[in-house]
Structures are given as C-alpha cells and as structure tokens.
Image (cartoon, rainbow, N blue to C red; front, side, top):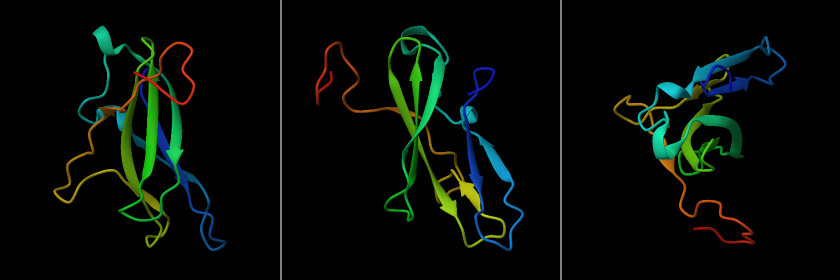
Length: 112
C-alpha cells in the first residue's frame, strides 16, 4: 500500500529470468473502498498462494473502519517473465468484494 493504492507484485524465481518485481495497481478495480462506511484501505496482505484458475492468488485489504475486502489474480508463470493476470475472461478487472464474515470484537474463529 502506498498513497492509498494497493499494489500486487510478482517476481519470477526461474534462474534464467531477471527476477525483478513486476507490479499491478489493484486500486483501479471496481469496488475498491474509497471512504464512507467502507473506510479507506490502510493495509494489504496475500490471502492465498494459488496455482490455477480454481485456486487463484487472493489479495485482501483492511480498511480504516475494520472491513476486509478481497480480489484475485492468477500467477502467469508460462510467460517470461512471470506476470499477474487480474482480469476475467472478458479482460475486465476482478472487482473488490467484502469477505464473508467480517472481523468483530473478541472474535475467535468467528465474525459478523
């Protein structure tokens, strides 16, 4: 996160690649929280390390109101260098959506 924008990076680990990070701005995707009841994004994390379309990389943001929102991307390791694909089959950016069960006070394996 920087300047209110959420970025996802990928670095190709193959020995014949330059191994630079390549970055994708995820704040341009529909549904990105921009204030109000949703709050403003203040932190980002990688939720899962997927390898296929059925198991994508998931990126979560937490907002200033304590909400958690998620979007997904695919790691494209067949390209040189590896890249992130964060669009659907129509080339539309995968939107941000609130996760089911938001954090709540004193939650233990629960949420609201």
